[in-house]
Length: 375
Image (cartoon, rainbow, N blue to C red; front, side):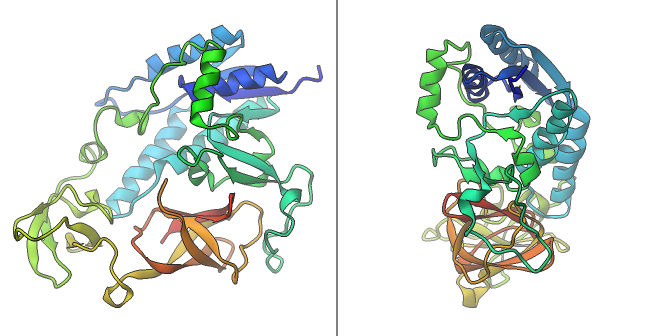
């Protein structure tokens, strides 16, 4: 009766399987849960195969197995959100929304409602006790009171830098983190594979899945074209000269160098990158320099909306932090100036190229402080 119950999100992959095995070995009452998500009828998804693999893992570990159908939440909060953002010319991150609304939203809420003490997933991240970082942040003036509860927690990077997924988890809060376990955040992927073989898990040799399930074998742009009409437009250089064409400005994001056609190009020209978009005129602006210098329009700072600071405290405005503006992107040195509770400005040490809608996630060394969505 004293054992804690953990509902583990079993995806059918090796990371969640090892997570469940470790928790059982540590003495928890473990329940495996497969989360059913949404995919449109015109795409083939291997979700049922993944569910069968999750069931095999649960049977091997001799733990109960449940299926939570969260397709409606996934469709509304991830699928529809992503399509809407692209229609408006922004570059959303569906993985961030999946974690916020599905895995640590609807799944966490339902699990706790039916008796779970915790939920766990195979994310490469860590839950850190707040008291270990008392000098890390400053409370803002009455806006973000710091919790003194023993359950107060922060989010840490996974120890494996090639797999760290804290970037996708910046929307979590302390209340959620107090009910979350990341069993493999302290392990490298090679160690996870070794443990999978040691536990003789049926997915030990299974390859890692890539991308978003509802896209299936279709790439993102082909998926979006089922919802957004193509509209041919001009590709221009930084001088405003027309040098090519594209099939719709909303299908492109900053930093891309594929998917559009350059018709006026010399033998000495290098690759062209998208550095700007005129949504109203349906024009792509490209350059052979991926990031423009400041005197040519490069960005030194960005405004964030929908900010979430995990400790409920603003980052220190005079302290240097690092941030990522894309998953596994470069860690950029920056400063953060908070505005209201839901806004902030991030100022970089050097010019950057960042698209509206992307997540900008702020770190103090190995601690994820939170972040926001680029305006």
